[in-house]
Length: 133
Image (cartoon, rainbow, N blue to C red):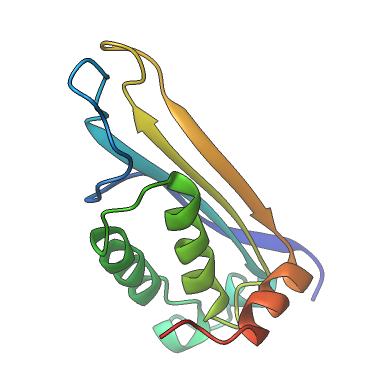
């Protein structure tokens, strides 16, 4: 089936703790996630209405929320890695773009984040790597 499709999640506030901050440092008040999951168009262009014909993203979102709460994390990079591992557990996901950002950065302004783009080969390598115990 031709075409491409994606599931998009934007501005999900994660309950997490990332980084270490001294008293004069600006401590972020929020960590936001944007996630684009590339999936087969066959999971969007459906002939019959029903969850068994589409990609059910709810378990993935619940897993991401759980992983975020597993902190504290020293870095955004570690949390984004764990989110990528969560995405890789779903064979329906053919690619993913993950953006994690924190704000504020200075006083009450700015956002600073990490963006990771994964294709099918990248997800395959993650799937083939045993998860740490």
